[in-house]
Image 1 (cartoon, one colour):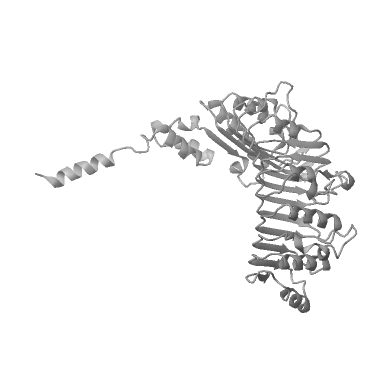
Image 2: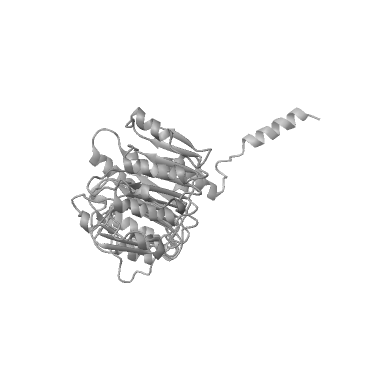
Length: 424
């Protein structure tokens, strides 16, 4: 028996198998979706069975930067990019589940531009995810066909404006909405959110609003709001993670007209676990937080991040009220500010009743930009004296504290024998 010969035959038969050509279509699609789209098209050279595989890709990601030759001819780069996209889409056959466009040229987004024709095609191909990113500073209008993408589950749009069509039936499957650099002149954001009954994540980044924005959603789990608003109302009872970062004084939105109904927002929360109130969120609060008037404590809230002026009476009082209704707080991070335009208070934190036990479950605290002011020292003294399970207090002072201030800080009484003050 020629065992050596049979082994050679078996080895030869294995090496002759064309594994790449015989891959299942679903695996081929996964491979192509991991490649830059220009490289995906070049796989047509692999074999006959790969020749037209790219034409049925389910995830399309077009990035204009991939077509830059680096010769300074941006118009030529843009023309090549547009021609590639047009040709690709004209030859594409099958559903498109994900579409990402990252472009910077204005003409693609102008009225009647290419994006309008492309969006119409997507609305007819079962699209589930759309991302449009642009470096254009001026706003472009979202094509009306976008609102016909009834199977959408995820949308990320940058630098756009929109108006809901009169017969818009809503996005019943939408789970995530992300708007970047969006300008609102009416409550179209609130109306869009209301038309997404299953929305779980809403991210509004660098928004500018000249209107009263009201967002009401009972399904939201994650909320991120960052921008400038004339008036902002949020009612999101089942949000577990929230970041509110409000800005003022840009020349567009006057400080006096920037109002955030903080009390209503806090009062609506049922499931909040971590919350961040940044920028001018406390300053813009139209009404303070009154613990006695809130229907419940935030028993699930374990992590909080605040940007505030501890020496500002309005902001200090709002923060104190928030601590009162968060009995299970475990981690706190404070970004300390000194706004300088409101009447300061240096004795507020010294006058807080120690019987409140504000920080009975606090484990970690971080204080950034600590200057050692009377208000900041008073707050730190209260915290150390009122946190029996505290493990670490990380103080970042940017080398502003002198030796005597450091000594006083390190000698502060601590309710927890395990509490460690770490100076950064």
